Amino acid sequence: MRVWVVQLRKGLVELCVMAALRQGEAYGYELLQKLANAEGLAVTESTVYPVLSRLTSEGYVKVRAAPSPAGPPRRYYRLTPLGVARLREMEGYWEEIQQSINALLKGGA
Amino acid sequence: MTRSTRRFDAEVQRRIDAHLDEIEKVLQSAGMSRDERRNVLDNVETQVLEMLAARVQGQPSPEEVSAVIAELDPPESYAAGAREPEAAAAPATRMSRLAVVGAFWGALFFVTRVATSGGGDSGNPLALAIILAGLTGPFGMTILGAVAISEIRDPRNRLHGLGLAFADAVFYPLLVLGAIPLGLAMLVRYLRYRPAPIGEGSNGLVVAVAIFAAALVAWAVLGWLFARWAWRVATRRSDGQ
Image 1 (cartoon, chains in turn purple, red):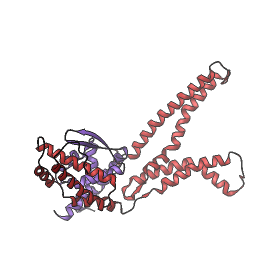
Image 2 (spheres, helix red, strand yellow):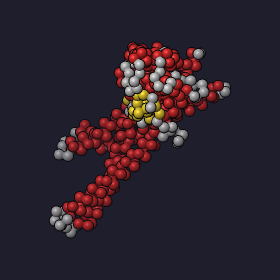
Image 3 (cartoon, rainbow over the protein chains, first blue to last red):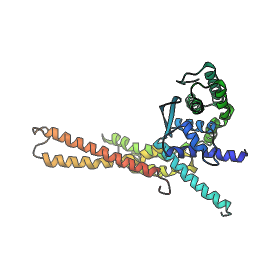
Image 4 (cartoon, rainbow over the protein chains, first blue to last red):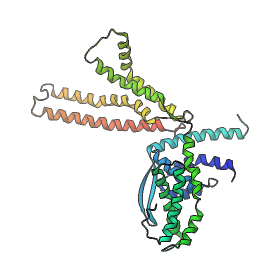
């Protein structure tokens, strides 16, 4: 895969993880499947799980364990109020740079 | 490394554990904390077991486990994901100075109130300046808090301290809000018990305590509603959504 594609996607994973969690709590593998289905994003577990782990330790995401039929308890993640606030900030920034980049790509200022 | 509750053959379990151990080594080398490593490994283990459960009824064979593991990212690929936060944190974010100054300014109000409660040398220009700064503390703290919130919310500033800025902005407004129910309670008590002050009537003290308790509850409810509204405003997206 081209390096610039990898770099671009890397920076978007945190935003995507938090946006996916806004729809409701999810356990790691479930979240991974959700994100993996997003066309073009193609994230894998080695990217998503460290991000989830970091968001948890930074207080943006809260985790609870619940029994699973497959084996160990599933770790369900959900956004904390701080995480919701962070996601709003990120969304605002994303929309801002998106507009700027679109303008540049279309030849505007 | 495993915390699996499902019983597997020793070889099956060994292969899962070996994969988890390799990932842990990579994460440890990348400087990830123990708690974060645990979090990642729990997720990987859950994923392995769910993938196995989806394709194998009963005991999986060692080959089936290896096949599942082969579909996963290799352990070394976790290094990039683990290093990412450090790289992201490199352009060090700092605490909002406005939020910190606002907190000190607000606290100065109480300090000067205590310091001047017993009288003092009000002719000293320095003391006068400090008293003046203290008296304006509630306004300064609230205004600086509000400004700090908008400063922190701009990601280009790379600032943190939203909680402190929010506390700065709402602390004194919450106190003022409390004055409404408490003032009403005092008025009610005064009008109702003017002929028989507290302690002189048969149940005057009990009723007065009940009135003030109701006022405190009203303050708590109003305060909570106000703080919730203010937090939503403070964290609302710029486009109003």
